[in-house]
Image 1 (cartoon, rainbow, N blue to C red):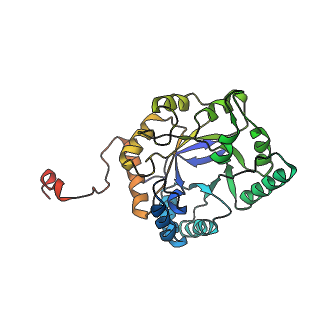
Image 2 (cartoon, helix red, strand yellow; image 1 turned 45 degrees about the horizontal axis):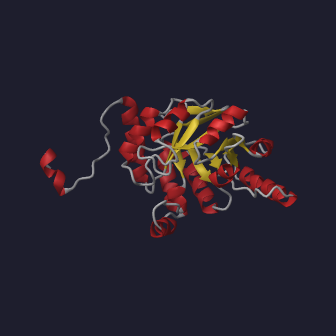
Image 3 (cartoon, rainbow, N blue to C red; image 1 turned 60 degrees about the horizontal axis):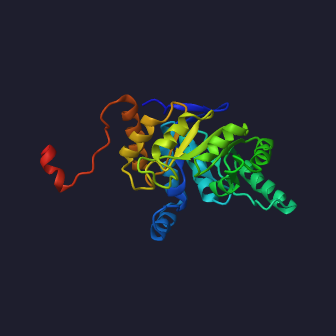
Length: 281
């Protein structure tokens, strides 16, 4: 199978599928018990096993790397060694927004940390971006200054956001970013406006868009989530997916190829007694 299709974020080539980190780091968007299970199960070795599958398929970009998760960085290095692939890292820092000199120094140190772990695309986290969004002035306050700080450290700025206005205001104001995050799934999970409105917003953007929560944090079957996303975004846009196991990684890769090629997926179906009468097995 050839490498996964790619797109460009400025001069950086990335696969159209990105590897999410919520299912590595314990952010289930379901229950505390579920998140605790993820943290306990996803060791350095198990994360590397998942990454190996993705890297071998040409899906070599991870969204959500951060200095405070060294076991994830260790797993990335392990998967790089196993596959001979170099990982592209996308990080989501959180800033102190108090506008004091101390905050400026703190934020500079935060960005230094992301640069030190080899972050290629730096997208201030939703808890930073959305706190700065001003619907009255249609701006994202201070984000231009943060973009300068990101560029100074050799990273491409982006926006991680849950608000559909953020990419719109970035375009309107000419904000110096290379890509945007946007919540996008068939049931509208965590989305603040209707799905068709977000679809329209994505198609109007001047930069490539990364869609997140395509499976609505486990509420949608992966086939449904992928079919919806791949069929409704542009060729330059990306989908960020999270998986717990190497087999799940193989499934979402094969499902995606089947959708691109308009064929039936070769993924083995889940068999239960209720389906026995369908295929006679």
